[in-house]
Length: 186
Picture 1 (cartoon, rainbow, N blue to C red):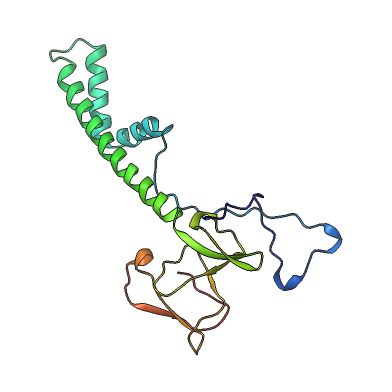
Picture 2 (cartoon, rainbow, N blue to C red):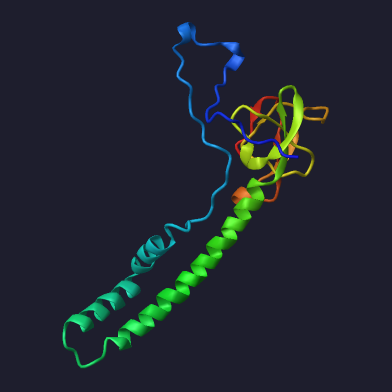
């Protein structure tokens, strides 16, 4: 029961129905609403992880020592520096891979959250990642905002709403959006 994303990859938004003169308008491309907090993909995990690991001074130092022991005849075996380095790199890569996998799962959960959007004159259930610039989104009490939103109306008599920004800045106190058409930057 979910509405698929729009077929076109751009949206044109005209404010106050002021259309461009003589059709000289170039449509703008807007980014989508997907949340991506993970660092790695399947394709870039090994090179990116190795780069990040060897940016650490200690890992780079032991890599240089290992390479010197391989090239020059030294009294110690290259295994004495190579094995611990390999162990540390492997354990750290596994830990970072697991943490990134958890971030991928969290992103998929947030991106797949159901939201209600006004499309074609009716309320349509879609996924959070399918919200586009210009969509009118219905938010009920105690729901999480799936995107940056402009407050159009509220069911309160004064037209206000209370917003908590704990997921953004850690503050748990409620902030008030008072005016209709007020941009709430949180």
